[in-house]
Amino acid sequence: MLEQASLEGVSASQYVVGVDAEAGRGHWLLRTEWFYSAFTLPIATATSLRLGTNVGYVEGRYRLSPRWQFGARADRLRFAGVEGARGRTPWDADVDRLEGALAFRATTTSEIKVAWQHNWWDGGRVHACGFPAIQFLYWY
Image (tube, rainbow, N blue to C red; front, side, top):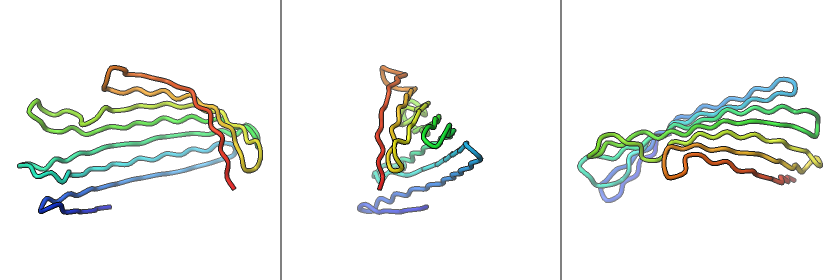
């Protein structure tokens, strides 16, 4: 996908490439996605500022019974570098994430999920942090 915009004579463009896949067999389900995005910022400078990211995940789910399932997911987000006076540096902190969850299907339209997510990143004062999550899903 390519989009171009113009702000008072300054052009900007964005390129996005993505791939996703899903496979299931028996009680197992596996999903994965990967995206690459690169864009130039509409800033009037001598050289255009081009930024890019790579992001992807892989997740798996195992259904123990019609009501119970557990799953795990791993994510990775990477930022391309920016050329500056001090050389090439990333424009944001890279992030890695792991998550595990247990879910219970209470009715045909509702589910309760308990999960733990842990994150690691390369910037800031805190470089790792984990937290619990409880979700109630309802669809109609």
